[in-house]
Amino acid sequence: MNAVLQASFERRFPGGPVIRVEDFATRPEVAVTVLFGASGSGKTTLLRAVAGLDRPVAGSVRFDGRVWYDAHRSIHVPARHRRVGLVPQDYSLFPHLTVAGNVGYGLRGRSNRAMRVAELLEWLGLEDLEKRYPGELSGGQQQRVALARALAPRPGLLLLDEPLAALDQPTRLRLRGELRGWLREAGIPALLVTHDRDEAQALGDDIAVMSGGRLVQQGPVSEVFARPGSAEVADILLVETMVPGVVESVADGIARVRCGEVMLKALAPETGMREVMVGIRAEDVSLSAPDDSPASPRNRLAGLVRELCGQGVMVRVEVECGFRLVALLTREACAEMALKEGSRVVASVKAPRVHLMERR
Ligand SMILES: Nc1ncnc2c1ncn2[C@@H]1O[C@H](COP(=O)(O)OP(=O)(O)OP(=O)(O)O)[C@@H](O)[C@H]1O
Image (tube, rainbow, N blue to C red; front, side, top):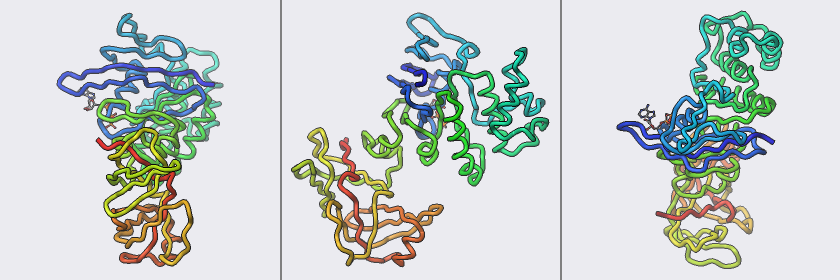
């Protein structure tokens, strides 16, 4: 079980926005919590308030039962006493120190310094680089050095600000998996900022979604992506298909939702919503030829392919079926069906994959 971080605070920037975070909390069973949101949504402000690099005007920050900040009681524990390891976005390595010097920086004067540095260099595969200077390292190597430096003094909490943002795309994809492994092995709870949806899904156990200076949803990554709590969150998470609908009837736990000319089946919402936004993730849509036999619990929507667009190993296919429905298929599946613009298809979505959100 990991120590828990709790934060509720307000930060006003003179002439700028108000960042108001309410009831942010990590869960003890979770290794990596991702802070996710668009640029300017307040992610870095939250990270800095936790690190003690920034002082909010109200609220509190607690970690592992200890108060780090409390506006009422005028408590502000300085950053150096919070035992937090920070990996800044640009890594901020000391250019005049070698890799070993950087990693051991926070351990100056400690007798176990050399041993701990060697241990981290070995763990992160940096042994051969220990005498190099940051200017002689690739972006990915610098990232590992920054991670090793942050972990060296055995912090209680690790903060990572867009740890992969400074890397080129292929390196970023390669390091994503490695970073995930290291963060889990490190045994230290981590808070990781990103505005990349794939990165959030790959690296996070839990996700806290921020928008306009507020925390709008938090929970397990799979749950939040599968069931965004509002159309705003679905938008932030880039749910590919969002279409307005009206719940016309509910029976046996299934809602029938009219979206223009099309009737969709969805799981009945818990509250009696009528005007809804319908969200469908592209990976939950499958396409087949029009004459394939129907699979029962699915919505089957006849449509025409309007656009195909490569997305890495996948292809994003837009289907006009009364509304624009986006599907994500492998290149192989597209080739097998000989999909092209104008192809007739049937799009299938299981009712539990049609998400209803209150329309405001
Ligand atoms: N020192 C400051 N003075 C004035 N406004 C600020 C200051 N720092 C941040 N802000 C504003 O507060 C808001 C939140 O900023 P923050 O850096 O926390 O966002 P973010 O989600 O981390 O964005 P990004 O992904 O671009 O780093 C933004 O509108 C930003 O312009």
